[in-house]
Image 1 (cartoon, rainbow, N blue to C red):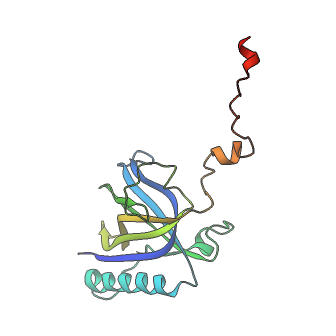
Image 2 (cartoon, rainbow, N blue to C red):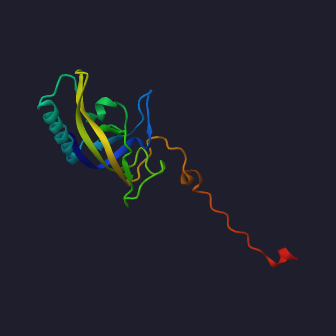
Image 3 (spheres, rainbow, N blue to C red):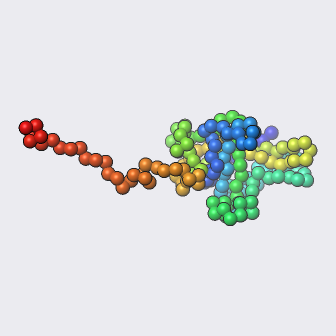
Length: 182
């Protein structure tokens, strides 16, 4: 069983939602890291309530030894990283392709449109797990995301036409003079 949560006003990082990727020989998955400010009480409450529900449903209301929560503190776990400072974050992944749309609910197919640093909303399923009776926790499955706003790219992103060539004007067509034909 899992608990569905939709979070608004989040920032996307480590975006791999258009093509699955495997890391260090692991099975390829779609994934994203979700960030939101520690001042965002609505998203914090939604996540904490969903985690508590999974602890109640899966572990009988008691966190087992070695419990790992999907919700993490950016200041503690990414010390010195200004992007994560003052934020909570979690990672969500899926073997199945997630829904990825823009503000008009049109499917996004270009990595130039959905990238690390943009903002939107995300739908995830939180679920409790136990692995070999030694690892226990609550993780997040990725259902989908909607991009709502641009943001400063976190992945370097390469050049854009505007940043590289914005000050270069399109050449004006040459005017033809009657004298050119004589």
